[in-house]
Image (cartoon, rainbow, N blue to C red):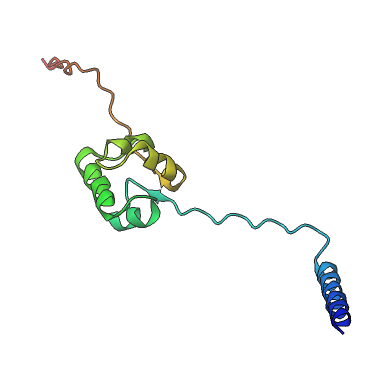
Length: 123
């Protein structure tokens, strides 16, 4: 009786396994595209947006980014974020694909010397 029960269970298991194998498609499954990463313009975003989009940047660091930007003007490079208190190079690298600079106005060229005086040419 025990042997008959074991054989019956084994036969049922094999039948279910072969049915499952037949239901599996022969073609490999297509990989799903990775979800798009949300990006943020660090020269225009508010602290709440920076906090939401950037990895390892909470409300305090996001506010530091906004404060730095207000004091020093727009960021010209992503690496310039390292000048913000609490933002290190590791944080920048984790977020490099999430950061956009947008249009940054060109900085006027300076030589470090004062501008020469223009002579009055009127007679």
